Image 1 (cartoon, rainbow, N blue to C red):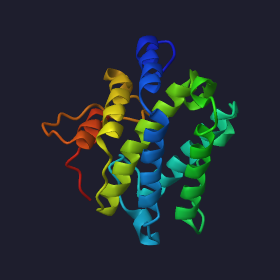
Image 2: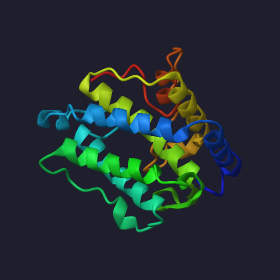
Image 3: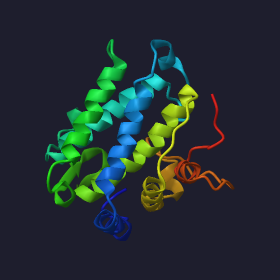
Image 4: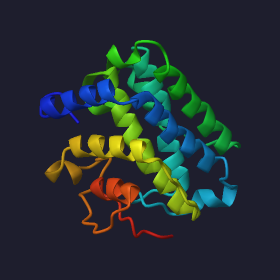
Length: 211
């Protein structure tokens, strides 16, 4: 997602925020991920996930760094060091919850959707609505990742999934999906009608993945 190549799609995210309760949808996704991580046991950290090359430990360290990075960016902090991935300590669920609560609090501040937000990992500055959209769709997908890793169910209501599908449609496809470090893989063809399956398939996950 770059300011140079996706001006019109990014503007669609501002429009999405203007006509839906994007912040409530975002909070639902992040809080669902918190509930899932609260059930993680030490032995689970070695499990493979639907994210290629990541164990659950790797997914959680990535997620914690992302939560803290987005929270700092919402306050205007563009320091790349905030986004650094660090090993988990003795309380992975507690660390995850604290980081997730930090980004929820940052995005709950008045006027956040209209701010300019420096997202160094995304290559530029974005509107608050765009930043929330990026983080929102990531945690719909990562909540699914965590649930599949743990063999647990995960559900979102129809409004959350409709908004996530709109954001997913903005994510660039083609060669961008196969570039090193791309957060999403190529779209996976999927014939099913489940809303969550369609979102994760659009962003490169196989809805049929099982541990």
